[in-house]
Image (cartoon, rainbow, N blue to C red):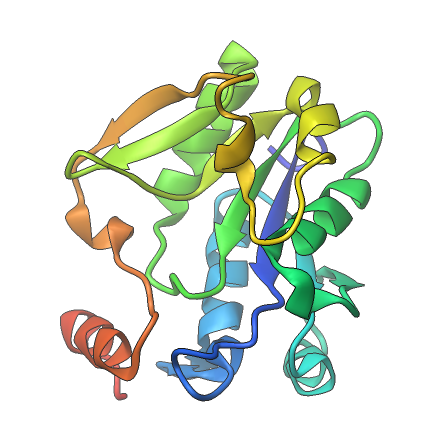
Length: 198
């Protein structure tokens, strides 16, 4: 998978609703961000692109020794679009597409990551998992969608261009993969589900 598709982990947010950096929350013997990076590596991405912003120095320090490509978004407060575009700009020109991961889903399955990426590579289309009838992550975008993704702004994400590049849906049965961490209660629930210590 590595060398054909890039994995981009969006880890620039300020965690306003949570109250502390979600990128550095403990998840077993690692952090939530480290867990997402490990899942991407197990799925076949040898050097994921990690976009940092809020608390960049502390988060960068937590990634020392890991094989990742770090991109920093100094204007992270302006919304997710800037981080998404900086991540895309770091994708090698010969790669077929990019798969976006979120730092607040430390439970993300390497199998789900690999399946979305493989399906995207095979079809050349936007691929979005559907879990419990809801759109979920990670989402794959082929290179053909990059030019439109580069036009989004503010808090817009990839959904803003779905009318131009309709997503092919991938049904996924594990409902835990749709969970994320927005609040301390979300974090406590996820830790309980996976036997981690919150």
